[in-house]
Length: 586
Image (cartoon, rainbow, N blue to C red):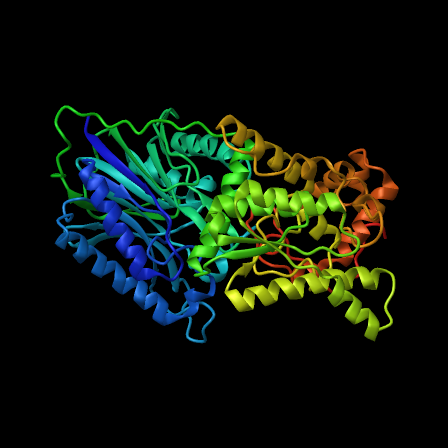
């Protein structure tokens, strides 16, 4: 049986950096060639980054992607890599954008893959299944492909597919079986969600059974605005055996030798199966030689615990947002509470202590233990710690305005926001806000106060998970012989905004172990009132919580972006009207 040495290049492209992404392909192709690879794969829309969103509608951007593809093919050959077949995702178009007045039926922008060899583009494939759910709007941007491309490489018939093609039964994988291929390549921009890695392997196995062929699945890694990609690239044999699997959240070159069935069908011409054309092309029977006597085994990385997985996702999402957008550092308010402590620890892990500024902003209601906890966290992590008392500024407002009650509480939060934004303007920091998903859900925040900031690393993290993450991060530090970053008192004390004497979150909200399950059912699971009550929740508490969620939509619409880790994050996933009189309680 023929043997192919595959190299899955799990890399971190940047949206819009076409030249930089092309350079990344060249660098990693060199690494693949040095490892003896005979076929290299890069992720979905590698040249443009993913998702490109409305950049699709700019014809200049599409043209730049196409030009870069052909230039890349020539550059690879000039680098001495022309003999190595390389599959790379790019943006193509065979007609005007679908939103333009001169649009043509069945033509437009294409989510495409190209096989580069010998200094040229030798085959292309257009994505067939276009996702239009959750964070995906590909029906808005792309036209679906109607042909499966099969290329012959080293005597093996190899089918080309892209991301969602794997997630849907039928279509390209069913046609791949009809075409008699030995290997299906699937290039991906598959965003992370908690436990998604548990779904991928069974899914790839199902598609392998459907195609009757092995599958090489390569996924990108890195952060892009609110999305984070976890990699988790893998190779599965035709019988469903997992042969190799890459780690999550890091760039990685997965190299593995595969024995594959020899091609049987003639090359050339077209056929039709299940309403898809099969287009065949021959790349080369002569491939780069592999080192004599060496067998490449990619190895299998076992998934990590949920808390470790989420922590890595949040760190990577924050790091890439800060670095890709050119911010030198970040600043956040350190209250001594659990949320700001977790965000500070994430920021230090993501950027290093020298790039993190923590500011204690005490008022007359700030407890001594909160001030001490904030200072203790700063000592443990080594971040730049400052103290900016807010009471004189608050008193100045109160001396000139007649304010009382919750208005004074909000005033304190807004003074803190002004100080953080002033430091941002003066010193160039990105302000991190620290509100968790539970608070965002019920509107337990001050607009233009504690909600102020350019990025929120824990926007999609429920309060109960915040505590679990803090405990895990401390335990992980102890396991490695390091100082736990988060003071135990920050974890153990009852949460409080400390905006009035003796204030606790439980004065305004149900306890979080009661609140979060209701919110998870309503927000993530789209359960209505009846479904929540049937699940065992107290009807009066359900009614109270749902009213808070429904009336806080205007606040969420103005909240900072933050890393998505759940199946339904606020913003990209959950899209509800602000003006909306529908209430689940009638």
